[in-house]
Image 1 (cartoon, helix red, strand yellow):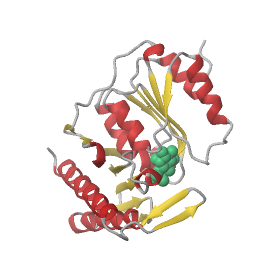
Image 2 (tube, rainbow, N blue to C red):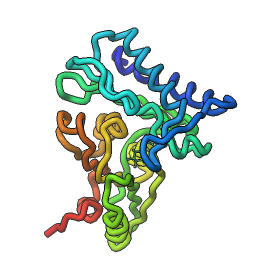
Image 3 (spheres, protein in one colour):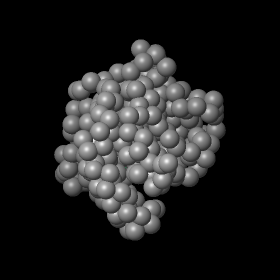
Length: 257
Ligand code: IPD
């Protein structure tokens, strides 16, 4: 395993363990809101601090973009992390949350790890290959939309009426949909072949950077904005198995000839 892949796998495990420990500690989860419905807990802040400290100790000149602290540093190597994705689930004791850490070098995402501690699932990818713990990684081979599952993400950044319209198109195509409330969980479902599509119309890079590396390594396909644009603004993100083009077009609201 290459040095940086080994590093992010160990770091994701340590970060997940810290989040679980803080959740179990009385007073460990003071909750605040960044915006209505957009929560941050003491654990989000502590886990991002841990991730930043570990990166600074090992690669002091690298930059870090984190959900809570923004972009710090100026380098061609940028670590991108959501310390706790799915905070609203995490703070209520639900299992659907995850740690996401990725690395971009010279304008290209090269490494990524998603760890879902309460599910015991970890998948990471880098130039030397794929690491999977808890289940085998590999996208679904299903090519019949009526057997397919689409995971959706939603945030108030999307016009509320657009979301039920998307669900309607999925159901009209004969497929089923899910929304877990954590992009890492939906994206992990595609990586493990437990769903065929993940879509979110306006997703921050820190929620999906790791998956943008891992999904192709697991045999799937991804679409998002160019990295330079996605570093500064959320964008539409699609990850899928590659075997259901008509369903993908329906999810995205694109007519196919
Ligand atoms: C959110 C979750 C949610 C997605 C939002 C994200 P957070 O991340 O991943 O599923 O739909 O776009 O912001 O705020 O819980 O880290």
